Image (cartoon, rainbow, N blue to C red; front, side, top):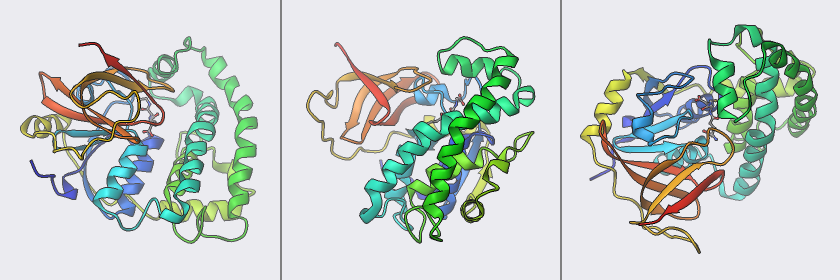
Length: 313
Ligand SMILES: N[C@@H](CCC(=O)N[C@@H](CS)C(=O)NCC(=O)O)C(=O)O
């Protein structure tokens, strides 16, 4: 089966998701057309989970019967399909990936707790309860959500100062003149402060260069977006076969193609997806999963930030 054209891409997302904003902006940076499926922000997600075999997070990229989970892998898939402009310029790829990892692993969570705390009374129904489940903690009282804001403000302020310092010499982007994956990863965290019921972006006011960078990133836009119904995305997967994978390069101890395995995020929303290993290398593991609604799908995960287990035959 040949790969579909770049504009056959479907993004499963919802508007206020910050990781989805990173994906939307990367699609815009690559100048791509894409179809948009709005998924619910909380469980149940009956039109997503059949495609992913259990993974519930947003965003997920789809092309036919192939699904890419996690924006780290979505970024790499977009780079393969549309190499220019680059998200991972070779000379700075290490620094860019490391900065992106910091932004998403350390800067994002206190940001979410700060912004959600300030907006505690204005979040969609059921969100606080759902996110407690995602993070495996008891459901907090609304008072506890409010109180988390001030504690987390003290954690985000020094990190905002780091970001501002990186831009202080007048550079247009974090690692030079052009955006890299570091900018997209840091930008979507900064984006999250804005546009909530109570806007929280005054924390950036002391840093005009950071604000100018934020506005430059926002101006990249989202590419060409067309809305489709979630059932259409399920029908697309049902009508297609997973694309032929690249040759695998398993590392020591890895499951081999053809073995059964399961994979889940190691940080939160730790729901397993299970299937036959279709592809594996140092950066990615793809499972062939079968679902009565969509038939066979290939569900692709990054290695970093994910656990896997072999399933005995
Ligand atoms: N590492 C993941 C993180 C994705 C993530 O945490 N997404 C949030 C939304 S911004 C999510 O899915 N929350 C739970 C949900 O929507 O069900 C990525 O890069 O895609």
